[in-house]
Length: 86
Image 1 (cartoon, rainbow, N blue to C red):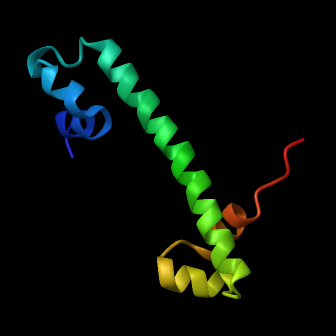
Image 2 (cartoon, rainbow, N blue to C red):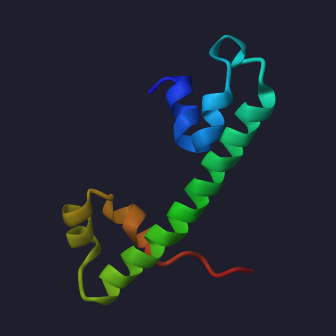
């Protein structure tokens, strides 16, 4: 994936307005894309944690979850049982 494709994925229609020759100079768009990537990572982690927890609660072991999903068992365990907010 190149930078233009990454921006299209993260910014959608806004990316079509970007002049590729001035791409690196358009910091506002690059910052917006980075913020969106971070937001998606956070949301995907939260959503994934709920799904992994449901799989564990349904009786699957973390090893079984790893075998079925490709997510390492240690990661599945960590996502399913996040630390309590202090």
